[in-house]
Image (cartoon, rainbow, N blue to C red; front, side, top):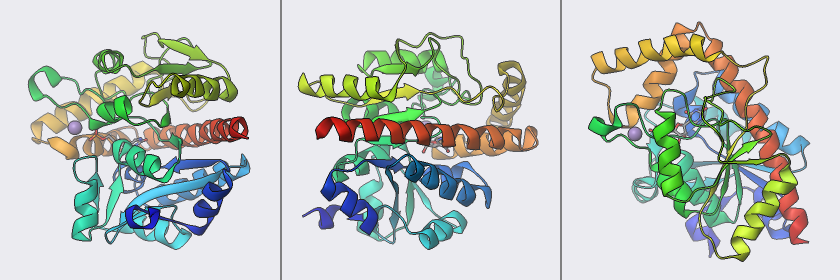
Length: 306
Ligand code: PSU
Ligand code: MN
């Protein structure tokens, strides 16, 4: 049955069959979030971190119309260099499958695929959210809606600071998405540890996060959960420093008429250039840290099932 909806790698299939810990990983970060070759180097390193914590990595993408849960090394490499890769969300995940296309999965699409496969924990960099100026552009990421409905724990370094973080937090609250600061009272801001906004909830261990999700499920409360895991102090970029680059990148996007799905990739690329690569270093550090925490949560969840 499952074979018709998604195709797991051998490693993922056997882990799922045994009830062992699996961590979903997204692929938009590979195709639209980082340049080659750092994108594939990071993807490989992140998978290795997940394994070192005793979990099985499942990088998710649509390859030639097949929804794959777990990629082989050569497939990761090919995806990282491919051109014309679709950036898939809830709206077009099944389109890519039906049309035989290749596409990477955003947070929203990765959550859907993870849920289909029975994977309950997912590591990303930062979720999409409410863009600045959304009151006129209406640009609000489908990631928020997905968090509201799909029961997967998403480990992030917060929402990307290119967004309007205050509005993003408001939408998450409206939709009933628990937002948990991991070891912090403050919601992290992706490249920076602090956003100036309080984290609505705080938990200090992977076990406590697993216990929270189990309690939600016992009570029949649907939907995902967002973990905000601040990157380490040595890797962070102070808010004032990154803020100037974000301002410039936003102005360039506006001047260039960038819209829709292209906005986030454009801003990330522009900030990479303006920061002389420093934003990428921070992005890599935070993704690795999120993968480690996600693996620990997945292990805690799997232990609780036994
Ligand atoms: N985290 C990163 N880099 C990224 C993303 C997350 O470190 O590129 C991707 C995720 O796939 C997320 C997407 O879903 O950015 C948000 O896109 P949008 O704003 O168009 O919804
Ligand atoms: Mn958007």
